[in-house]
Amino acid sequence: MTTPLRTLLTLLVLQLLAGCEDTPPRPSFDAGPPDAGPFVWDGTYTELEEHGDWVDRGCFASCRRGKASQHGTFEAHRVATWAGEPESSGGLTLLSERHVAQGQPVDVYVTLDHAYVVSLPYQGREGGLTVFDVRDPKNPILTASISLPGDNFWNGVWAWGNALYVASSSRGVLVYDLSSPALPVFVRSLPTGAFGAHTVLVDGGRLYAMVPNTGTYVYDVSQPLAPVLRALITIPGDFDSGGPHDAFVYENRLYISNAFGGYGVMEVTDLDDVRYLGLYPRPDFGFAHHSAVGTFANRTLAFEGGEFHSSHLRVLDVTDPARIVKLGEFRMRPVTSIHNLILRGTRLYVAWYHEGLRVLDVSNPTRPTQVAHYNTFRESDPSRGDSLFEGVYGVRVPGDGHVYVVDSSRGLLVFNEL
Image (cartoon, rainbow, N blue to C red; front, top):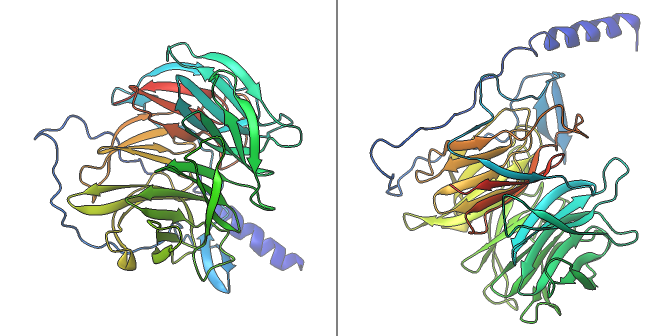
């Protein structure tokens, strides 16, 4: 590179960085108490145009499959809590907090009066499974820390009956016996190929394991400790998308967050006759990460979230999967990423990495509104770094009156359910 060209680029970068310390636009804060009772949506909406996750600020661009896919700048941001935003709001109260010594905690499942937290290897610490007795949510008690030799990159967890299923990047799905809930016992692994398993879920007596670059393995778990493989489901036509990252099952349809391949819908009533119903693509090839689906005003709606910078919440009408329509959205800062979602009635609990736990009222799905939040991210916490993927990873609302959250540094946090 010549000296004049290098000088020109340096000046350009400095000019772009000049505004990086400006106060970012504020998020949609709490709606406050309703003034006219619960909102009842009548099912009408205006279709919204899809612009993708990324905001074009002009100086940075990348391509995927020969097309421009992302835009940005050389800006650097210090991601701290919002100026003027309190630690919590909306009556969301932290009841207890427990450190997880194993790796970086990323997901939690609560059953049989115990919270099962899985972790990834991080900063020289092995990942694995950490178990807490949560019969007293204000005082969780550590009962076990488990990992397997050469296998502790564990990203997802679910339970069914007396079985615990763990998504392992090495062995596929790990099956543990919960006959003694405080001390799970390893039973077997379910191999899923070279990419292991990234996430798992159980619905209607079926275990679904999402395997990157491969597809969704479906098992019959009528005998929870002895799953039987029934099918391998793939979305047709896009084999280099990264494959299924996560999924959701609702009314015999499998909603697949297919990474860079969009958000797909499959009919899975009969596993011998799985049918592809439709896809919601991203114009910027944004990353489809996680979703929750429910019925509102006789319409089937998906609350769909991405991952990476600027990813946010979309509300999609998936009643007709052949024509999926966007009708609402909710965004936080463009430098942060959304992660996992849990829908309970008209409350959507969102694990939003640096933004902490956000609770949205989605009774009017065309205008999701924040009603509560808790900022878990503190720069002073141990093991914080400069990764986009820090803060709240996972959230569960098991129906016991509490909300269970895992933060990448702070570990297991227990809140009251709203």
